Length: 458
Image (cartoon, rainbow, N blue to C red; front, top):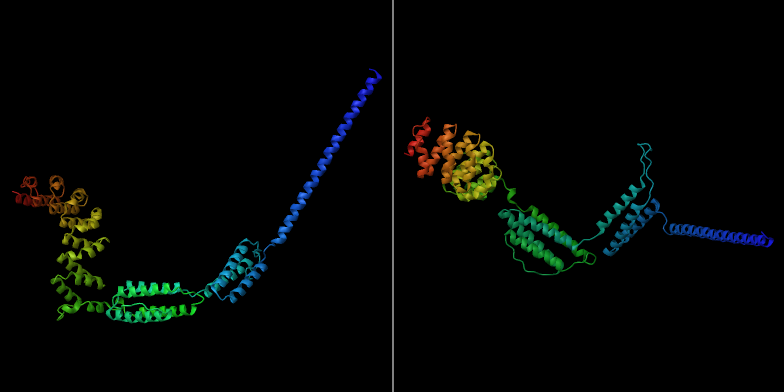
């Protein structure tokens, strides 16, 4: 290679090295600038955090306590409902800060005998006390007056009063209405009677009058206090009025006229003697009165027996209520009355224990509705012999011809002669030719009681 060529090669290499060095220097400058920017960003972020920390200092137990003390002072100075609203908002803010504050926990390793203070618990108690004081300072409100009147209305309507008690109520309500009219400066017509509904209506009108004047808790505080005093006197008067429940049982019966039929006392106790007379006069109302009033097993038994003998439809509703509680006596009475209203109340007991089932089956037969034929017929195959016999006789009382087939099968196949005799009796009761034919063929049956029924069909 010539000298000129070697020189050119060296020059080219030198230029490449220079360019590479310049590139490295450029990259170094860029890297340095990037690092400076990162440092500035970190410094700015730290500065911002410091600034924010300075703007929102961390809440401490002492700072929260100071705020509560300030709120307490505001509460003492509050004169209007608006002032109290401001204090309540402040307490809400303090509660949020207390929940978010990172307060120190009490040292669990402290001696158990020592009282360890819990800053959070003490502050929460302070806050709770202030809220209670706030509520105590609110009002009084017209709504409280109306609420008291509505309570009085409920008592008047829901209570049974004596004649004397009703008269006392009239005086109490009249005095209350006069006080209210004078306090709110209004006059509305009032018609007072001894009827509880009428008195309740008058009190309702009074409550409406109070609501219409729109009493302000600040400006009309004195008027509202007067009305609240009046409602206290109203409730006290209602409490003192004589209720029916204040009377003894004998006093209640005497005032209902239960003893009016007694010209002399033939039987003891006198309640039993009076019961016999009311039964003879078919006065279901008086028998039911004695049943409801006399808390005696002895008199209850006699009352129920009287109702069963009477079989009067006036006893249906009270007996239905008792039947719903699985009362056998009531179910028997419903059977004697024969009202189909009883079916829905007792039909579900047909599959109950034998004692209940027999009572229900007999009652259904006495009612005599073919609506229950299948339910009763299903009892012809149960295990208990007496239930099967009751079911057969019940079907005879119902008289539904659909029962002929199951009764014929029972007469032919049942292992109990008493059940078979009941089936034969039932077929005779149904009385159609088909039913009678099914019985006649047993005129020479092995069991005399079956033969006896078969002979009746000949």
